Image (cartoon, rainbow, N blue to C red; front, side):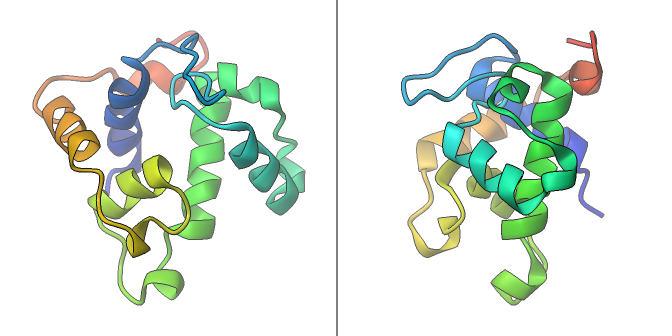
Length: 129
């Protein structure tokens, strides 16, 4: 079974060095560097979750949003197979059609490096970073 929390933790380190206050160049914000378009997409698909742009600053809400994103885009039905760790990583990094594009090798290598060191799996709890 895939440990999605461990994958999210390594993605957080890859994207923002685990900094919930990180701001990227494309208005990507927070520990998981979530873009406004992802917030809008997840807010429309999961209205009961009440996602807002401000949720990108919250590690817990960012993780919830990413889990919903994977539930939408990283599925057996969409891929025709069980998603792999690489699928989860590249889905968040390269967008919903990641599997139709060449893999971002530099990003994948950075993610792989973070898997070799201990990461804080509690970073997504309120006050856990």
